[in-house]
Every structure is written in structure tokens, then in C-alpha cells.
Length: 526
Figure: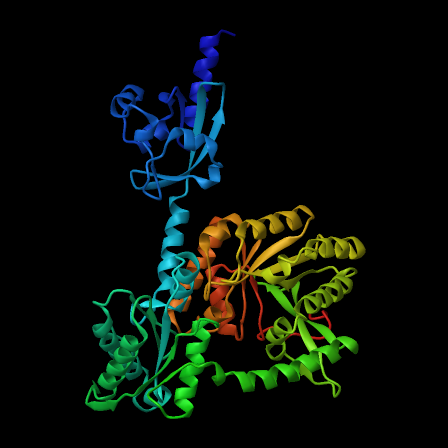
């Protein structure tokens, strides 16, 4: 068979592949299939060579910088994203010999469009169109700015406004208050304004001096408190309170909230956080639950409860989530809400996680179900945690059943380490789920690299999905986003039939919630 025939045959095969492919030699394009020519709007290879002198002329990186071919060859393909004529691609490079490279482009436009839409929904308050709490947390994590102070503002007795005048009036008040505050802030440098859930707002200050910020807050409160708001024929008086934190020792969001709650209790317009505000109550509560937790370890009264996950098509139990509980002497079952954070402060969290893991592994070693256990970055960064997992897998042989649920939040300091951990446990045969996805903190670039098997859609979205349009849109987009990445989705907090029917219709793979079963002492739900 002659070489011309083979070359022609090879060209025909490459041309028929349904993605852009081209060959370069010494940075010049020497061959391009029809899909690539169509992508760059060229008739043929000669037209392409006239239009583009070098390969660098064709590509633009998504970060806006020119793409150098030497850089192209030195990076991992998944790290390179480019756009050509409003379409977006990942690059795969094959070196055929020392001078000739084959470059294949994989279209990711649909995937990025999903991400863009999801980011817009996640980072914007649906009512006021202001940036929301999720956007603030994402910015604090990724943009690396450090606020000098944070102000939380709250509409006093907003529930009464909703109850008396109706939700339309309440929505109008929320919009009007945000507009009034924004009128003060929109021209100020170093000030960012956010709408938090329900009737809360947040001002983030990057530049203002303490005295100037306090004066600004006083003016905003006075203006709103002196304004009469109108809805239909009703006059509505609105009062707001504020909590301000300049704390350098504590999380400013948390301390601003402590100051706000103190302002409400003391009936002040605003309160500025000072260290004594939270010391006494926190100390007393910490001591109580630290003692209870220590006693629970001694008495082996840390137990695991199990909540079933239902296949949305067959309605059969496929998996269980393992949830920690503390059993008191009188048999009362205590939720981790009361002791989980205390366990971290009292250096008992690691022990708590490992007790749950071993008890769950032992329980499912002879059961025909997959099961999930929750782990955090705090667990993962412990030097011996991976060795502990390997030891438990060897002892109970559940690597083909266990799913590690990881909460992706702002506490993660080293994603390279996290991704390495995930790759390691996946190589052992385990699976990974990303927990509480969709609100709070969700970084989509990291999700793409995590090689997870499941996304668990956050409960705060699911529980509102039947009555909140924004929750519905976000959930729909998350499910579509997950499907584009071949991830299975789990809807948490499925509390009634209507919610179940909605998440099933949207294409979620599994449901979890009280509509089917609360957490139970034995994994025997049918």
C-alpha cells in the first residue's frame, strides 16, 4: 500500500472526527480538519495560513493574556482554556515527533455557560440584585482582600411587616431599604454592599477609618428610621439596627453578628463589638459540652444513626448517610448541633470523626449498601488521617461501599493537598461526594478538579424549592452542571411529596429527607 494512499486515508479519518484538530510544525499550521477550519472561519488550509501567521495569533487565553506556544507545551492540558470566536475549548497536545505536534480542541462552551449561569444565580440576591453572602465569602477567599471592618444591618420586626401587610409589602420594603443604603454607599471607594438572607444587609469596609465608618452607619440608620415607606395606601415605619466589628482577633462576620444581637437585646440603634460581649456565655457553654463529650467517649455513648438515600427512579434504598449522635444517660439522643463545634475547640474533633468512621465501617462490612461518612479539611490535613483510613479499609474491607462526604468551604487552605487526598482514596476504591453544594461557599473551578462522584445539593435550596424561584433555578442549573461532568446528584432535605416530585423532575438522582425517613438507629429502612 503506497504512502500517498495511507496519508490520504489518515487525513480523511482525522477530518471526520467531530472536534477541531490541527497539526503544527515549527509553529506553522500544516494541516487542519474541517471542524477546525469552521471554528476559525476559514475556507481551507491556505486561507488559514494567510490569515494566521503563527499559532499564537489564533488563541486567546480565558484570562485575557496571549498564549505562547512554549507555555502551551509546558502545562497540563486541563489547565489551559482558550476561546476562539466566542467558543471555549480545552487543549489536548500530542507530540508526533520533535517538530510536529497534533492539537485537539475539546469544546467546553456549554459547561462554562452552565458555570456562568450558576455563578450568577449563586452570587446575586434574587430580589434586590445585590451581591449576596455567598459572593462575599467567595471574595474573601479568592480575592484575598482583608476588610478593616464589617457592618451587619437588620430590619427590626420585619416578620410583623410581612404578617400584617403581606409578603409583597415585605419585598418592597427590602428593595427600598437596600436602595436607600446604596444611595449612601455607591460613590464611596473601599465600601462594598451585600444583601444577606431574609432582612439582613452587610457593609464591608476596606478603607474607611473607624470614626468615619461609625458616622456613616449613624447617618444610614437615622435616614431609614426617619423615612416613611409606602405600599399601596399604607404608611409603613421601618427601623434598622446594626452590629459593627473592627475585631482583629475574631471572624468579623461572626463578631458583627454578636454585636447586632446585642444591639437588639439592649434596644440600641447599633453596637460595636468588644471582646467581653461573647466571653462569659461562650465559656460556660463550652465547659458544659466539653464535659459531656468527654463522658460520652468514656461511656462509649457516641453512636451512629443512618438516614437512607432513595433512588429517585426506583424509590429503593441505595445508600445511607452515617450521622453522629450523642446518647445521654436517660437515653436522650443529642444532635451534633450541640457538640460538634465544641469538639473542635476542645481538641476532641479528630477522635469524634474516627469513632464514627470505625463504627460505620464495622456496621456496613456485612451489609449490601453503600454508605457515606462526613469528613472535613481539618481531618484531611492531619498527618496520620490517610493511614487511619487505610487501616480501617484493610480491617473492614468496605472500600467498594464507602463514600467520603467532604464539605468544600472557606477553611480549605491547600487545594493541592485536598485533591491529592481525594485521588489517593479514589485509588483505593472509595468514592467522594461534595457536601452542601450550592450555597455558602462553592468554588466551581475546584469542583472540576476534585474528581468527585456525587454532588449533594444544599438543604437550604431544596427545602425552599417549591416556593422560591431562585432556589428552583439554582437547583436546576446545578443538576445540569453535574450531568455535564457525569456527576450524580443527591437532593437533601426532601421533606414532602411536592419537593420530591420537583427534584425528580429536574433530574436529581437521589433524595434524602424526612419524607422518606429521619435518621434511624439501624440501617434497616425499606
